[in-house]
Image (cartoon, rainbow, N blue to C red; front, side, top):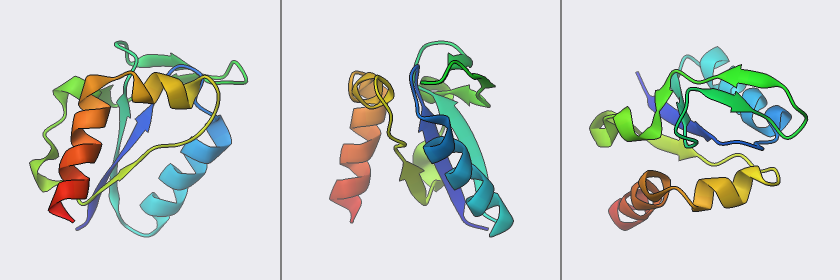
Length: 96
């Protein structure tokens, strides 16, 4: 089964993030929501409280097929500020 990690951060646009999670799960992809905010509790751009499955720093990316970076302000800059997120994206890009 394919596996995906969807990164959430404070200020993530909840529709962009949750729609991806929903569609991937309907497609039978194993999805892990990973917080890039240092806490599993995240407040979205429209003040919706979301609980992640894990912190980004806790995830084993060795068997992950896809990472997703949802948009939103300030969610996108918050994702870019997280070293685990950027390191993971660089590793995926280098791996092709």
